[in-house]
Length: 178
Image (cartoon, rainbow, N blue to C red; front, side, top):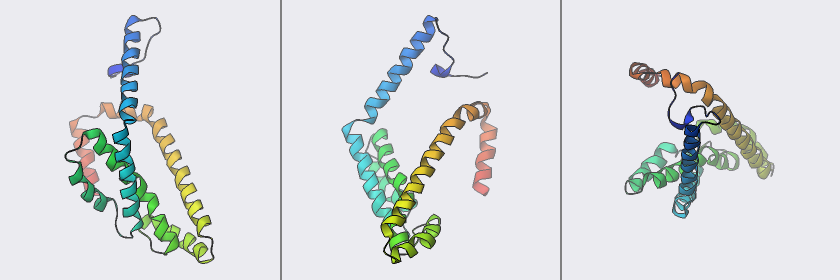
């Protein structure tokens, strides 16, 4: 089987496995230190604010947000760029709930069901109930999706490692034709 780097199984009692474990922990703590650097957290917060503003305006979406932020990221380091864009894209899907419930205008196609359920509640004076239900269901769906993704990584990993250039080209061309 093809395995790479520190992801190989660690055998207890092997001196080499202790070195791999130390290397893995070094990478882990380096990643945590990079993650919680204050400037990167500031870029993440700015991305979230920009994403909320773009998501609340009906008709604007991820493509518009990316086209606005990508020129600003050319001078940033890759981690700060990733934090800014991730913050913006992570709130776009949930920010369109606000105009869908309060105004009855879907910001994206996915908010149409929210308009049908949430806007009548807002007309009855229960907008907070509709927003709470929409955000709670978004939270549960996001956590479930993250759990399924994390659980499927060990299953899909051998398949992905077995793909070669021709397979990836075929998948890419198939994706472009859809």
